[in-house]
Image (cartoon, rainbow, N blue to C red; front, side):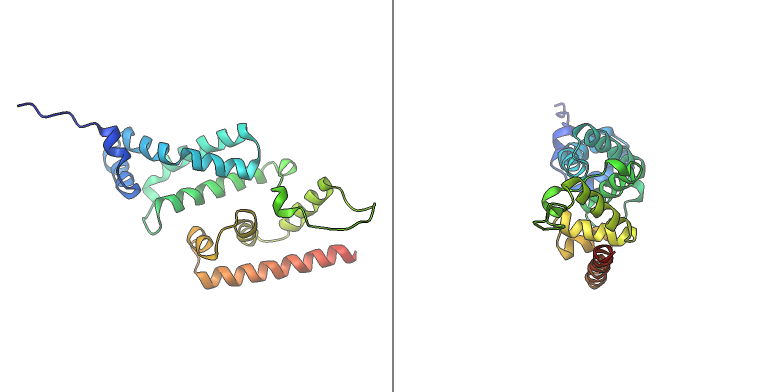
Length: 193
């Protein structure tokens, strides 16, 4: 009696992320990486789209992220979930790309819409407010800026920020507090000048 062929695609689709990562590393069979890709491509795309607000750029960045993941999968240490590692790569890659083209960076309107609330006709326009936000954020360190954006733009919890940034919870709370204080001081200095 002949044995039935195993459908690797359906088997791969039912495996845990960690099992798939191990098989990608050891077997080099593209079916296993494809399963990871299919599992996460829409989530990575949405993350890229949220950060860029440009569908074409988000598609390109999504492909870049998965190429980077494929090249670096041997570096995944398993100290966090695969999804956390993938989202950290996504976040850092998009931030790097956006920093290379700063004039076109736009933050989510709902996050920053109330930067300055005033009835004065000489108040800055929304575009001017975006420029102000960018200038303020540029004055923070990369780590502080990322923590602020994760908390207030992405709405992540302290625990999620801790996991993604690979910092302890108390370190995240401390950095977040210091970053808010720095932002407040920078804004106050801008308003007084």
